[in-house]
Amino acid sequence: MVWSKKILDPEFWRRISPGKGVTPPSVIGDLVATLGLVPPASILDVGCGHGFHAAEFAKRGFNDVSGVDLTPEFVSDARAAFPGVQFTCAEATEHLVSLSEDRHSLIAFLSTTVFGYLPTEADDIRLLRLVRRALKPGGRVVIDQPNHLRLRNTPPARFPVPVETLTLVRSYQLQGYELTTHFEWIDDRTQRVQHKESVTIRLYDSEKICELLAMAGFPHAELYADFKGATFDEAVPSRLIAVATK
Ligand SMILES: C[S@@+](CC[C@H](N)C(=O)[O-])C[C@H]1O[C@@H](n2cnc3c(N)ncnc32)[C@H](O)[C@@H]1O
Image 1: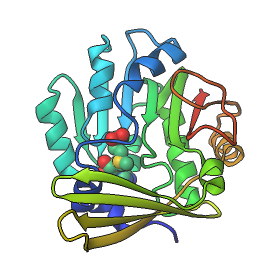
Image 2 (image 1 turned 180 degrees about the horizontal axis):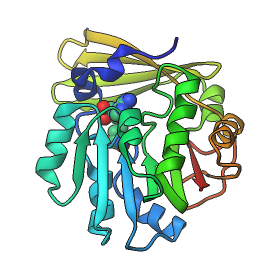
Image 3 (image 1 turned 180 degrees about the vertical axis):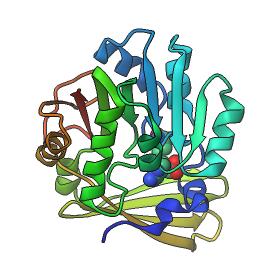
């Protein structure tokens, strides 16, 4: 069991991601160009958080954009900031069950979202099967994750980010497909650790992600190193972006 209940805790997300994702909104322009996506297209951002990726699609002329996230605070922030986008507060798998078949052109999981957060690998496969069901023929799924191998080959490091009067320091530990991120909030004045917690998710390598996609009915996946469409190379890039077509 690698899943952590903290994934369901809005306070946890508020503390570790104060409105910023790992993947900046600017990548959406690159993704649209890489996929050759043109309106009209029906787009769903799964685990949309504050909705800024979904909003970037809408800004580019896509008028059928929706986002789903289980954290109510994020969904209300997203609704207030981007009224042109349809946001739903729901658990991803339940939401996908409720969608019509063959409707979406693109379903995106950005910044290590949802995919890999579910309790078991079988849940991830079920989620992907539901994604396939919701895509129209020719529709695509995008999964954006850190590069498993790069994390495995990188010596332990600490990544500090200033957050108001504190510094949030992340460090990573990889065991098999389980990635544990340790968070420490350090008081800038006293340098004392005020609070710490850890969260574990499953993080798949390129071979495994292709295997799971194949099990869900996507026999071929393209792998990219970034949203501009650079070829994926196991050792170098920081991200692994998998794109599969129904
Ligand atoms: C790392 S954040 C990424 C948010 C956003 N995609 C971004 O790039 O900023 C992960 C998000 O996934 C959401 N989430 C986690 N598990 C989920 C689930 N099972 N169903 C729906 N949302 C989920 C969390 O609420 C959180 O907003």
